[in-house]
Image 1: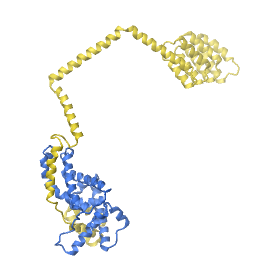
Image 2: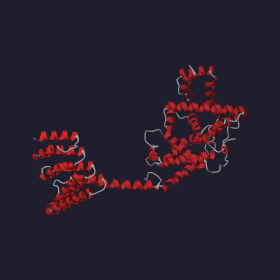
Image 3: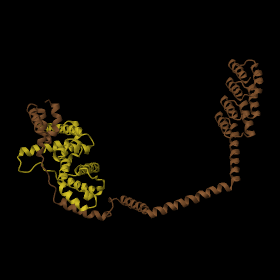
Image 4: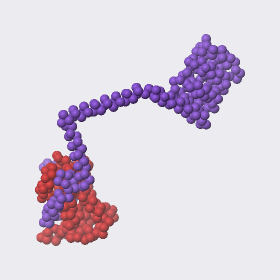
Length: 190
Length: 274
């Protein structure tokens, strides 16, 4: 990243190869939308290029990149909300080779994840799928490491509750729905 | 270990960031605690959501973006934003200016130039002061008369606070103009406000070396009704140590219906003056 910062812009390709898949996964888990996720990844790398001078040597590139990724996502949510939602190709819950029961479970899990409030979903995605350490998450959120651990744990517990409710076939409580309603319903995976 | 203790370990356990001993503690607890076990199970279940691969076009789009980027921004500039490029340009220009001083020869030349300018300006200023002393004194006189005019007009004002200001204006001059002096005397005798009268006395007290002022203050004593001003006048007379004042104070003491405190003060002043 230092080379990119010092003007060797073509070195950004190395970073792209290394981080485009994790970033893409971050966005697919957050949005359940492949097309939007690809756009967001491109936007993140454009921003990295644009704001490369704000990168401070000695800091973790990954944390800095996720900071940009979060902001990009927030901007996208703000931009998208007033528009009429469009239906795009949803993420397939699991590969076809999986058993029907596992596919069903994965679909429920995805729905539960999408019903989780945006900030809690983000915490779980970062800690579980992006494998960010708690100190990195704490730096991203601007909180203590202990607080980050507690928040991840609470998010996991809330996901568990939503998942169990969905498995039982009961509709989630009004509160859960209100909190989880960060995206238009048609954008959710059915 | 209870659930609370496990909850502290659990986040690290889930990420595999605990020792084997702690790991065993968590697993042992989960065998007997369905609640904590379900948290762990939920975490593991998230593995059902498979990792996604971005499409191959993604890399091509990135390449296109990278190729397009230099054309929209200057080679050396910090960002694509035109304003920032502009700022960077200005910054470079500023630094180029300061670079000029980095050479010792140029820095010395600049300091000599500054010295010459300083000496020239200083001598010019000095000359002008010496060559026009009469102009300065005329200006000073004008300023003094202006102040007196202001003081006089303010002493005529309806508002007590403005008259007070007038009194303080009049006191700014070392030598009291006869007109201002007369106005202050008038104020001391006849002003409706005790505060203004006291302020006038204060202004006059600085000019106690002039006999007519001392006489005016003694005269004012006879006409005062306010005990406060009477006491202030008596104190002032005692301070001036005017030998003529003792006799006048004795006469004043005989005034019927005099406030006892004022009479006592007059007695004290007389004893001091003798």
